[in-house]
Length: 259
Image 1 (cartoon, rainbow, N blue to C red):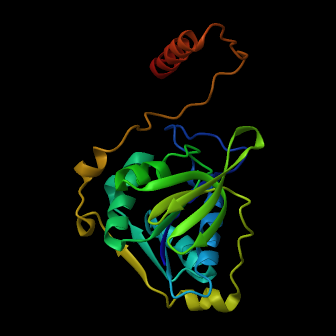
Image 2: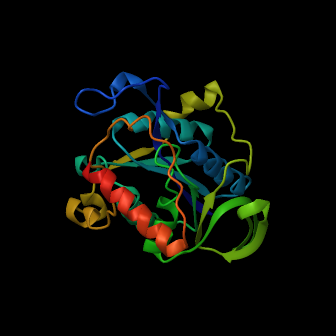
Image 3: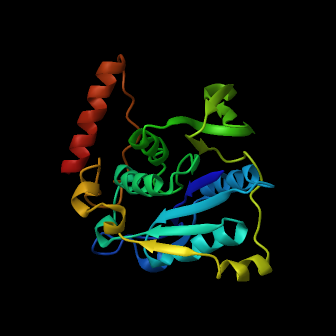
């Protein structure tokens, strides 16, 4: 079984960092690492293919600094890796990234796509489900258990209040994997050395039949600016029914963006 595992290199910030004068995060305050949720989706892919003549392909959208984390995926057992990058993707949101991953998936034709539920930096839980939508794939979110029987999977998904739902889904499909589903393995020194010989393909948008305009058309948000939050004011309690509260929240957001 070919399994595609989208992974993300995320920024971990120092606790006491401060924004620079130009309202950006200083480079020395950032440490880059593989997203925690993606370590569990990668391990799930490796376990599903154990003892089978399958292939696990890790893919990321990122610049050259992402290659170190891709190599760590190869060291843990992924068969090959793909890195997609174009300068127009810098700062791209989850929907734009999903459109790039969809192009990779169409080229690779995997039977299963395993994404992490969310990333530790953006915490949007949007990329995986958006990718399923773009590919018109059946999907299950927040999966905490996976069993395979032929071309069908039985999965457990986490619901609110600790409830677990048991579902059957046919391949091909996409799952977003929750932390705790397994125990991610560590790469041995030998595996780390061998990973350097495994294929890591680098692709631009053109090779995938995309361009900056087509990717940008999928974007749903963009960062306007960063600023320190105002200090002193406490929490605001909102009363009323859902429509009234939603209207007030929208007004608060508009006021904050125009401040």
